[in-house]
Image 1 (cartoon, protein in one colour):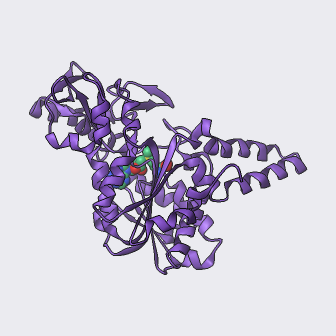
Image 2 (cartoon, rainbow, N blue to C red):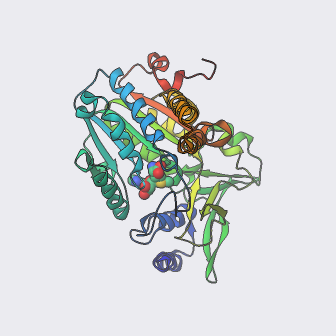
Image 3 (spheres, rainbow, N blue to C red):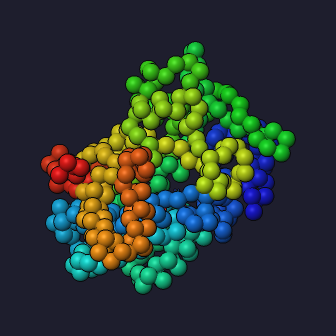
Amino acid sequence: MSGLVRARLAELLSAQGKLTFAEFMDIALYHPTAGYYNRPEMTIGPGGDFYTSPMVHPIFGACVARQVWQMWNLLGKPDPFFVLEMGAGVGAMAVDFLRMAERDAAFYRAVRYHIVEQGAALRERQQAAAEAAGQRGKIEWFETLGQLPGGQVGVIFSNELFDALPVHRLGKAESGYVEFYIEADGNGYRETAGELSDPQLVALVDEATLTQLQPGERFEVCPAAGEVIEAMGRLLERGFVLTIDYGNLAPDVHLRHRKGTGVRAFWKQKLTEPLERVGEQDLTADLDFSLLIRRGEQAGLQEVGFTDQMHLLGGNGFLQKVAELQKRAREHMDLMADEELHKMLALFMPQSLGEVFKVLIQAKGLEAAALKDKIGALTFSLDE
Ligand SMILES: C[S@@+](CC[C@H](N)C(=O)[O-])C[C@H]1O[C@@H](n2cnc3c(N)ncnc32)[C@H](O)[C@@H]1O
């Protein structure tokens, strides 16, 4: 399968001589039939190269649903209520979300669940998962954000979408900036430095990062992330965008990777070399949440708050579920409950996934400052 990816790269390399890392990453991950995410055998979780939070335990999708339900209440319970998940993987979160949503009949009735998923094979996987859960008729699928009409009232959310978008790899030089390209190296690929493919790329990074980086140090920029958040903002007339992802605010997100660790590759749940196994391994780069905040503003999105997964879960009923399970485990010597607790806690504990995943909440058509103390993810405190 990866033969098709290699053939496409060879074709472009022979025409252009070199590719930006973003072009390379785009083909490796998103070649329509053979890219990493579009191969028929693509999967996430058991048997795949990495786990995402929805694949760890259904409590994740349930807590996201609880957060979206609270937003629906804040918006005045609109019916219809637009819900959009972008980049839905194998469909687990959609199913867990809708199961939770069923607990409030009026909410469930109002929800119009949309999925925007680039890959045809993944869309089929999601449809099969929804069918098996009896939720197929509740979801509508699209390939791009552009296929949806604007003027929506609702919530757009994503988990690990932005960290899978193609990035350019740049470096600071004694005078100015360089870009790192990919060129052919026998049967493989190697990196080569050159001029910026577009001088505007540097403008995707904040001033503090550019000042603090030293000559010889590196950083990544993701133009696609800016385009996606703007498109999300434009879709909404009133509502929220909830983004869960690896990454951080700038400059931290960039300074952390200044020595060149900004792109990671995963194969069979191990860290590998980004230029190897093209099309067969995942490539990912930490998200610069500050870019989403800045670019979101251009489409009317105001930052409501920035937090982490522990707070998102904690503020949406997670600890109550843990307490219920603990009780069951204690009273009935339920060893299954113990195992389930273990998985759930991996999502929450700061030393596990609770802190590495960050959460950004933006709002449009609402008084952002007044919302901060009304959102579970932003009000949770461990001391309570
Ligand atoms: C790392 S996976 C995360 C999947 C899922 N959200 C989860 O948590 O398991 C990234 C997902 O985003 C999708 N994706 C990437 N770029 C996209 C785009 N431009 N439009 C729609 N989906 C996209 C991929 O196909 C994949 O489903």
